[in-house]
Image (cartoon, rainbow, N blue to C red; front, side, top):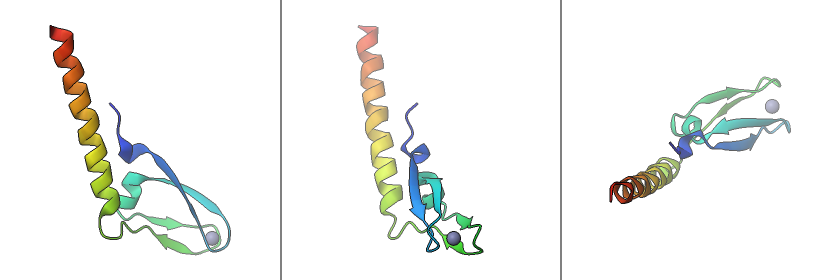
Amino acid sequence: MFDLGKEKIEIKCECGRKHTVTFRDAINRKLIKCACGSNIQLNDGNGSVRKSVNDTNRAFKDLDDTLKRLGKI
Ligand SMILES: [Zn+2]
C-alpha cells in the first residue's frame, strides 16, 4: 500500500553533505549523524509533516476502499 511516510527527502548538513531521510524519520525526529561530526536533529516543526502524511495516507486508503467496492459490483 502507498505510504507517504516512506517517501524520501533530502536534507543538507551545514558541511554540504546530503543525507536522505524519509518523512517517517522526520516525524520520529530522528537524529542524523553526519560524517563531519555534526548531529542533525530532524524536526517536524508544528507537526505539519505528520499531518500531511496522515491526510495523504487517508486519501489513498479511501481511494483503495472505493476501488475495492467497485470491484465487488
Ligand atoms: Zn556534515
